[in-house]
Every structure is written in C-alpha cells, then in structure tokens.
Length: 395
Image (cartoon, rainbow, N blue to C red; front, side, top):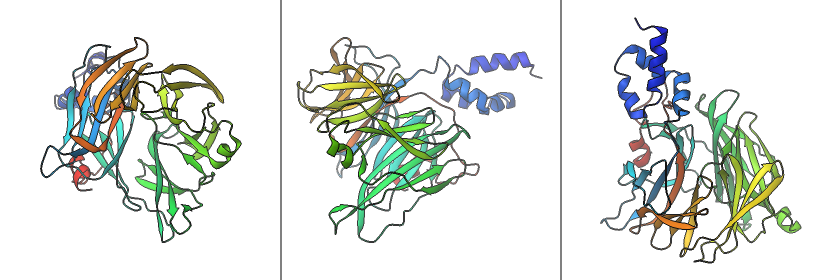
C-alpha cells in the first residue's frame, strides 16, 4: 500500500518529467495513473520550472518541390534558450504531408491550440489540439443566419479561459460584404463556444460594423480571463486622434469592452502582442522595407496609459515580422527567400533560426510560445474522427 509520503515523493518527481514520459508511466501502476490524471498534478506539472517556455514554428503552404504539389503542415520546437549568433537546433514534432484548407493556428492556452480550417462563408471548422499528448477534439460547426448575396468579409478569433468555471472558450467574430452595396453589411455577428457544454451560443455584439478589428495579433493576446484585439473605426479615423483602440472580450461575462490605444498614426501597420505579460503594440510606417523599417514598441502600463519602450530598426532585407520572443527578440521571415531569423534588440545582432521555406509558397508561418501540457481535451466518448490526422485532411 502506498503511503501519503510516497505519493508526495512521486508527485514531486513525476511533475518534473516531460509529457511523453508521463504518458508511458501511467501504465506503471494504478496509483501513478490516477495521480497523473488529477487536475492538481496537471497544473503543478505545467507550472514546473522544468517545463520551460519554448519557441514553436509552424509552416503551412504549397510545396512546389513535389509533383503534384502538396500542402504540408509542419510544426517545429526550438530549445528554451536561444542565443544571438548561434543557430538553434529544432525538432519536428508534427508533419502533415498534404492537409486541407488550413486557415490559422491560435494559442496556446495551457498548452492547447485552436486550429481553424475554411476560407468561405459557411465552411469554418475548428479543432482543439494538444501537441504533447497528441489529442485532438473536433468542434461542432456553427452557422450564422445571413441574408442571401452576402460574402465573407472578415473573421477574428479569440481563445481563453472562463475563470469562473475553468471552461476553455472560443469567441468568433464575423462581418459580411454586401456586393450590391459595395460595402460591409451593417451588422456584426459573433458566437462563443464552450468546451464543457460542447456547444456554441450566438451573441449580439455592442459595437458597430464600422469598428474594424485589425490584422491578427502576434501570438495569443489572452490575459487573465480577457482576450484583446487592436481595432479602429471610421469615427476614430475621422477624428484623427488615437486612431487605434483596444477591443476586449471577457470569457466569464461574455461581454465586449474597449479602452484607448496608444497614439499610433492611422497610416501605420500595427499589431498587438504580449510582452512579459503586458499588452503591447508594434507599429511601422515602412513595414517590410529593407534596412529602413522602424518598428515602435508601445506597452500598456494601466488602463489607458501607454509608454513607448523603444524603436526597433532590424538591419535586414525585405521581410515580414511574424513574432516576438521574450522581451527583445523579434522574429522575421525574409521575402522572397522565406528564411526565418531573429533580431536581438539588446545585442543588435541578427541570427538565423535555421529554417528556409523557399519551396513552400502561398501559405503562412506562425511563431508561437509553447509549454507542454497534460490538459485533456478529448470528449468522454470520443469518436474515431477525434484525431489530428482526420482534422487536417478530411474534416
């Protein structure tokens, strides 16, 4: 019989091991299996010092090196420490040889990612994915009642946790284009998904269709039960002062909100990200330009208060900014070579991350901050379709 002292020792040792080892050790004995499945152990393991934050690179696109061409979806994991001047090693943790119409990957939240497929008005599909446990959960489709003749205009996604119920939720916001009027249809549609209930609920957003949520954020801008997007509107543009503002969604109350953004000119490209746990923005007038692009970094310090911490001027050729790592390392994908590198603002040094996706076009490259997790996402009675291969290819 296992004593309480022995259980505490097992708990301490096992919580420091990687997920793949723990999945194997569940077969050692019933006590270990029961321990590893408890919510307290899962939380302790996730927050363990040995479970360090790592950089994840995911690439999707058309591979022209193969005939007929295929659409691979590859996910790589890098070391927890990346040093200027040293090309890091990387490990391929998932390879999809020829997947379907992938649109995005969002997260992570507690080690979970949301995968999105579908590029047309009524074929959006989602799935939860835990790369560490290899679990995947298909999410039922949701449909919006829209008038005939409308086309897809814009979609924005947010994922997070309802802190009152510890329910993993998704918020999906959509607008539609009225071709007859050559304008956005004057209504915002939204729905929220509850993992515990495995169902969607339609919402009535309290903001106008003229309030546009800007391009997707870098990484996942979820913090303490709230999701954040950077937005603008015709009203703000007309006034010419603080063109951008922050749109929020509270996963517990399921209500939208907003607060003032930093003083960024309307002609600037802008994106939102988390910098050391704080909401931050990156903006540039000369985005992508070789050697001459300047990126202003603004950090929210409380409420409507923002401070510009520095300006980044990466000494690199034509590029796309695709992410940030730690406080001061900015990830870029060079165009058209598709090399991925980072610029260290502190050392002023450019370093390759060892990726060259020159043969893969018409796709996306996502940079994500990742920690392994044991969080279960399968349904109590999963179907044979609740697996990553089915989602990627057939769903």
